[in-house]
Length: 248
Image 1: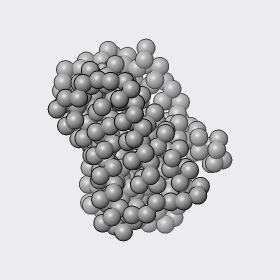
Image 2 (image 1 turned 60 degrees about the horizontal axis):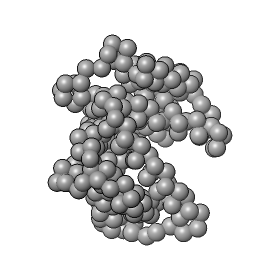
Image 3 (image 1 turned 135 degrees about the horizontal axis):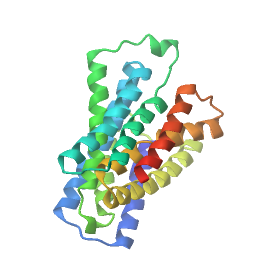
Image 4 (image 1 turned 45 degrees about the vertical axis):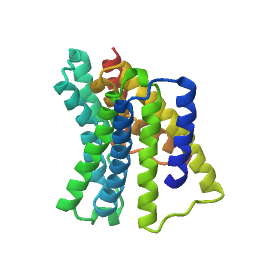
């Protein structure tokens, strides 16, 4: 799926970047590539941690680290959100944990939480959080070019990993159509994410973006008819409260 969605998204972003214009600078290239590599590595390590350890621990721990990294970096860079927004950040972190907390099945529960799994989980959260930081620091006059370089770096990494793991094959039929749809959604998400980071404080925009699991849960209920757990409902309520506090 990634072998299709990642390069196709790169092509879409390239077209949008040429239409939108902007200056291609060293900072745009370097920060964009670092953002793409950190995002790709973060997702890779996250899936590896979930495969080796209990999802009920890995998922919320990675989510809270992911959301906390840009908040901490923002504080170091001198960002000082208002009292209401700061409280909203705390509420949002709690919401992220509740929404992404999976109970798991019996086989998952029996998986051990080893030191390696913990480090993989933390590393994935840090890498995904740094993706926000790198994109936030890209020049505002660079347009969408940083996203193109980010997706280009991610494409190279995905192809290399697929080749080394003997998974260098493209899906066909319905999986291929879904991969193309994913590429379109991924492109739209990255464009809006970049604008949100550039137009707001890193600590605020990154936390709001990190609430995306709420949309995943809602779609899982509406499309896949999955059952929502009480903790996830509580998390989505907290997410709505957090959004109101931060945007207020």
